[in-house]
Image (cartoon, rainbow, N blue to C red):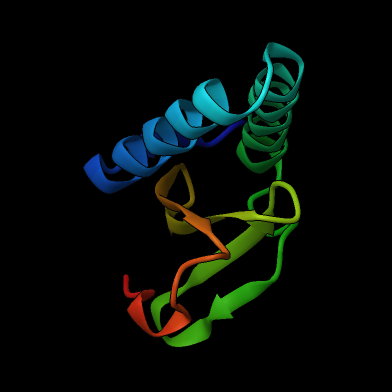
Length: 99
């Protein structure tokens, strides 16, 4: 059984910010690698959401490293639904990371 994946508005915003950055500062190959990696991770999460470690157990937030600079945070809502919370750029101040 696959889980349904919901994108929170913040996850859409941070995903698009990362895409814009890659479009401006890198080339299409790097952008496509990022998009392919995100698609592969989302596919894996939809099949096995427990694959990646808990980051904040009290909130049931898990994290997946997309690449050295971007981390995907998500939450398992129930036995059929996952919420994508945000794509975090590791260059940001970690004190600003809130869910």
